[in-house]
Amino acid sequence: MNGRIYLLLIAALFTVIAAISFFYYKRKSKGALIIFSALTALLLRVDYIIYTPHWVRQHDVVGFGNDFGQAGYIEWFYAHLRLPDFDPREKWGFFQPPLHHITAALFIHLETAAGIAYQKACENVQILTLIYSLLILFYAYRIFRQAGLLGWSLYFAFALAAMHPGFILLAGSINNDCLCELFMVMGLFYAIEWYRNSTMTAIIKVALCMGLSMMAKLSGILIAVSLGFIFIVKLIREKKPGFFKYLLQYMVFGVISIPLGVFYPVRNFIRFQVPLNFTPEVGESTESYSLVQRIFDIRTDTPFACMVNNGNAYDEYNIFLAMMKTSLFGETDLSADVAYVRPFAWIVFITGIMLAAAAFFATVYVCFHSLKDKKNVTETAFWGISYVTPVVFLINLSLTAQYFSSQDFRYIQYVIVVEALFTGLYFKNRGCEKTPDAMAKCYAVLLGIFCAAVFAVYVLLGKP
Image (cartoon, rainbow, N blue to C red):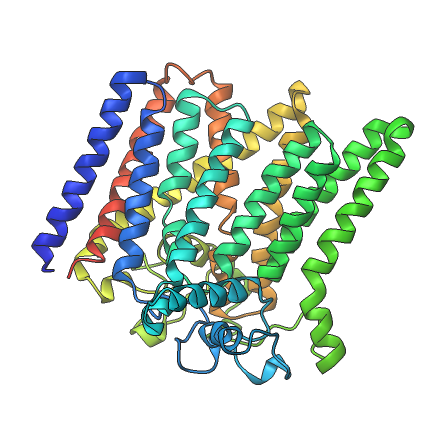
């Protein structure tokens, strides 16, 4: 397929999406923008995994057939159907918890049993991560509705989550990040569900999400702070009448989540003396830069993460610039593959910073007014903690593990869902659900420019 046919095909598919959305608008009016955002997000994700081979723009994957890296880890399970019987430090990437890799190995077995060639089956592992990414969007929508977002407040929140490039990149990343992020988002959703209706079934859902997120990647533990907060609040409020009921539920939560979450690192510690918090040193060092530079030096001449290996003068060292750039474009210079994405990438970068600032303001505003008005304080605090915890974690990781890769936003990508929620809550509090005011209209323009530029970058990136 040449470049012209590719662009015509994307234009035709986008036209179909617009037509479906317009038809839905004419028939039911409400929800047409949600349909439009969801279908556009689907188009971008499917397009991305079609033009992105499994070894391109990956993290710790290396590639199938290399006997190491996370692809090699998947192949181990495919070949042996058991956990590694050697010190996982002997092979790069094998220290990771195995849920995603086992799932991917079983998926490859199903494909080859159906007659699909092995190499093609390996490439198709991106189908799994595509599904994970779409499920994140599904649960993001459920979170927004759970919080009572309607109308424009819902449109803003959903469009931001649907079109954020980080989730497009995760759709094509065959490592364990996306599955972990999915269970974290699910865990947050089911935690609020449990808080409102504290049944044993609800706590089991939360426990499974918590344990499985850590079974995919240990960073799943980040939601434990939010869960601990809401558990304690529930226990304090119920006091004596519900004390033993909730004590029993918390015991069930621990019995389910703890073995799922820590069995692999504990096994490796017992059998091979691997430290429980083992993480290999990786990436380009940032330790030669001062704390002032890493926080306040925000000079940049590119919207992409700087790396000496890519011809830049230095490796990205400012924590906040690195977080912003990697959240939008990953760790690579996309213009190295397709030069004409750079102007659109600058638009994504600039509008992305503005949207991040707006989301931060919305978070502070909603949390402050919730405390002031004493309305929905516990749930607002829960979501505030769900924002603060991962951000503090990533900043601390960047300062203690002083490597370029330690600043990658993919570790906490689920924060975008939380920030989208606070953005929606802000406009809900302003009464903009049915009729947007001037500020909402300005935000709509900003978000529209961002989404259009994201679409341009990630469509043009695949142009032959």
